[in-house]
Length: 194
Image: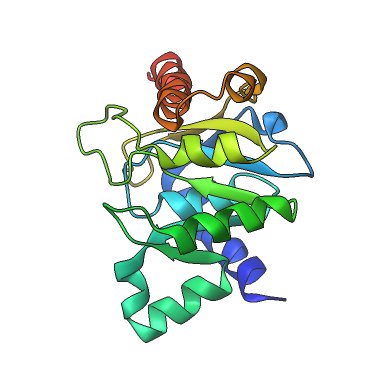
């Protein structure tokens, strides 16, 4: 068993009962081919929760600071995470992300860039739009409807893939595309709050 599968198993055993995770719309994630899963960001444990709630092996972008610790950085690399420098255009990370998609894998993004502490869906950064426009990947919005509280229900909602053909044809800006993705996440979040 590789480290990714082991991590997924262990996180499932812990997080599903602890947060009573309910997954909605899992069928909206394509079983194969390149896909970008874009989720809102409310906790440090969002990446493993997104990872365990679908059948794809996801490559996540993670803030560069996490890789400075050799133990944590080593583990992150083995579970398909790779670093990105926050607050600037990181060409290496952009190239790596496009390579992941070109190989037909799933890329996991949190377009807000940092956690939102007010249970609202914030504004997304242009990176998500960049990947959407520069690839042929399916774009799947994901709403994590929390907050995370022990033994209280947490929903992970996957929406239908967003049709990007018009945006790609019009050569829309990366920010316009990110705004569209965030609006889809916002709507999913609003519908499933209870």
